[in-house]
Image (tube, rainbow, N blue to C red; front, side, top):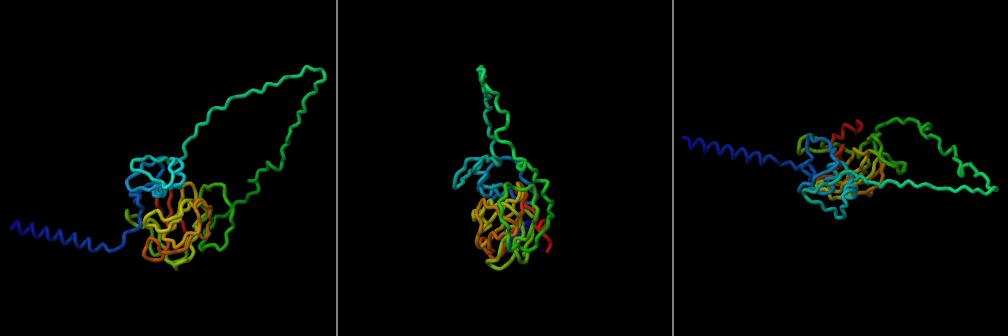
Length: 288
């Protein structure tokens, strides 16, 4: 009797496991090679990162919210940017200690000749008053607006650095949202927008291209734009990339064309990250 009971239990357990395996027919979600990107993870604020098995420099940069070229420079890593498990990477620029300046004294000798004349005390190069006008007095406050459709023409001027915050978010592509953000550990870390192959993919905000290529597995042809010191956005599955790394781009500027690289259908995978932490893009994009 006992043997029969145990036999029935094991058969039931086997059939349950088999049914569970057979039910998982959905494709695996897009995730980074780095296993530390998961639901509930806080933004990465440490100044160093210890490399784990499977990490690449590109994945570390994406996870920590940095430019991979900067990390390579900080750690003196040259192409092809090989890193090793257990290696500690600096994520901030090393502090350069400058030697103290030596104080020099200019000794002047005074002439005792009776015909010596006093030196002219006028300044050699008098300042131009117009050169020191406070330009902030002429700057008018700008209204921050959200743009729903890509801009057709964009004024291009190179900024000197990143702003404190993103002033304008806009939709990176036209089309239907076919998958939304999920907080699940293996869920979608952004949104997917379906559209026509070759259609425009535009920058969702002003920023600088910190990555353009296909080295991150699962993302196909990928563009990553840095908007502030803490915010990044990513544009994956592209058919073609139209910008280069270190290039400044502007909200509405065409940066790629929609495609299916790295996936099985034509769509744009769009992510927003704060210090490497995945955020729901729909919280920032304007309402349709």
